[in-house]
Image (cartoon, rainbow, N blue to C red; front, side, top):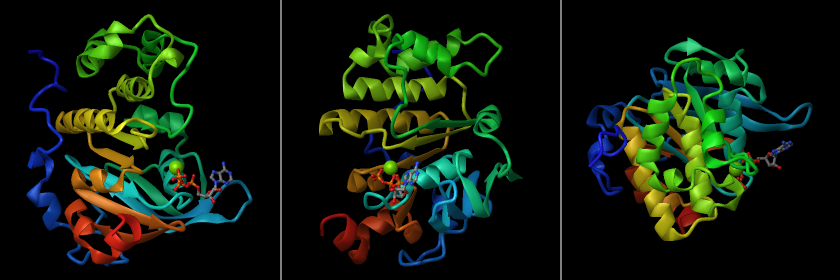
Length: 274
Ligand SMILES: Nc1ncnc2c1ncn2[C@@H]1O[C@H](COP(=O)(O)OP(=O)(O)OP(=O)(O)O)[C@@H](O)[C@H]1O
Ligand SMILES: [Mg+2]
């Protein structure tokens, strides 16, 4: 056994994450166009409208949010704007309208780096590790913003992802897809984030590795780090989601608890293969 805070009561069928209080604050109708009650959410991108540079708007009044103790999942077809919404929340997009709030504070004007300093960890969909650096160097890079001793956090990451300890002196680019994703998540954890944003953390991995990664993500959530993540494995992801968003063409198409969305005939037909 280990004393790592990430290592207690693993299992992605564990429903203890689902907070009854959180569910109670959600809009009952799974068809609701209006997002769930999110004003009090820990992290919220609220009614975001904007695009890249001077290009057309990609997001249209798009709202995504996560509460303390929750896993929030964003699903939707390719090109729906899921990554764009995550980038907007992280401050990588010039929003024309809308706001981003963290713990009640408006951070819309802050740079991504300033958001990291405020406690946001972000694992982007692509380019999320330094392939020519070792695993350990990647983790050290993750802690760039810290001035205190990072060893305890590194131990926690290694306890969460033991394979990374074994491979710590190996170039991250030599690792398997699932292991690379562990490096990416571990790197984000090195800042000791208060909220973790993951864009397709299980992209390109086998179903078994996907289950493993979901287990670890649940472990992280159980340590008190809320998680806002995009997933292409919609069904599996919604099963562990306290809060789910289906985005279509940059808009909120369906919002509800993971359970509600999984039970919604329209969502099933359009996004879950029936
Ligand atoms: N850097 C960029 N500059 C201009 N347009 C972009 C950029 N990145 C994405 N887009 C456009 O924004 C739209 C939404 O893309 P986005 O990557 O957010 O979708 P997604 O839902 O994450 O898709 P996927 O499931 O493939 O990851 C698409 O039309 C895409 O072409
Ligand atoms: Mg994407």
